[in-house]
Amino acid sequence: MVPRSERVLYLFVSTVIVVCCFVFVSEWQYRQEYPKTFEFWALDLIGAISLGFLWSLLGWILALPLIMVVSNIRGWRFAGCLMIGSGIGPVAVLALGLTEGKFPDVWPVKAASVISFSTALIYLLLFRRAQKVLAQREVVMSQDEMKS
Image (cartoon, rainbow, N blue to C red; front, side, top):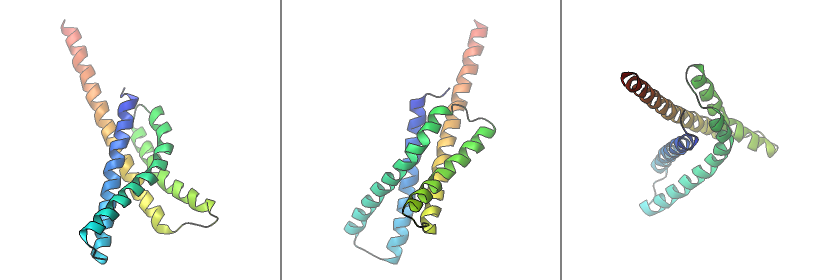
């Protein structure tokens, strides 16, 4: 079984990768439309990354209990966890929008969907790889015990 601390680390790594990639792509698109000086663009990029991590903190809070409970993602559990993980962001954005008394715009929900799906997929692939490595170690250890 993969330790919980390692699973939390995988969640952090997947969040960092996805938030940075999403911010870089959106900032690059924005820079193509509205050219700026490099200094202003760099400050804007740092602000956007910090804002992206602030928004992903809500997803972290919602995903941590699931990460602590699920210790095996073999078979159908992979797809189930991917569906649940992909839905965390859009549901959170919709819930925050509905608390204001209006239906939120479509683009934040789409952005949350892309970010949630990508983060969940990277996390699950890292987790599956760690499970595979642990399983291979157990096989090697059991073969060594049989030889001796």
